[in-house]
Image: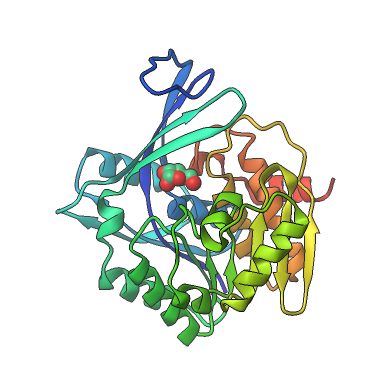
Length: 303
Ligand code: RIB
């Protein structure tokens, strides 16, 4: 049992602004924070804080941002012994703006995250147990993630593939994913149309299932989540919270889903866990810093 996350780790440089700037415009922001992020690491922190034994496999540079990231992540309930320090690459960076409507814009400089090679596959394989859940995203080389997914399948582990940021995928990616969790934008890149409601989400899920995914989970943002497998389908309405910063809400969703599946919970319940974790992440500033605790999740699920 447990969660293994292979993916990106960044230093997030986040500004809070009244609105996202127009091209060529200079805006005054209200505040600035520096926190560890990266879709991979955020998902690992979510899984760890929600109570699963969690290992993160990734890479940073031997530089100031890398040292800063390592110092900050040491306090999280995540095994970070799988972070490799790469003398030839810079630590990943994300430059983020969040507006007063809680919306965000993110620019990622990948650095060491895109230098992953066979060493990440080896460390992932070593971390996996038969009942593990492996979480993958798209901020590190796809071929390395797919090799890790194969290793997970060989060990009878469950593969959750978060296709973020959006990119067209080869057929193998669908066949290796037990669960795929695109949002509306990512769904559009994968299937050619943006689902605006449950009926379109069902059509998109059908396409993902035909391509080989066992369970398609279509995140519709403020509208909720549609999910479909060969034996089950349903819709989870959104949890109502006071959102101030939507950065990493999708990562929290994946972390919550992974922990629930690792604990053997039924699919419908696991989707609720993901939705609740995602909602809670929007109530706090920052990326990994905003991931909810188990107590916060259980309190929201009980409402
Ligand atoms: O999903 C949010 C994350 O995307 C941020 O933490 C940033 O680092 C980028 O990877």
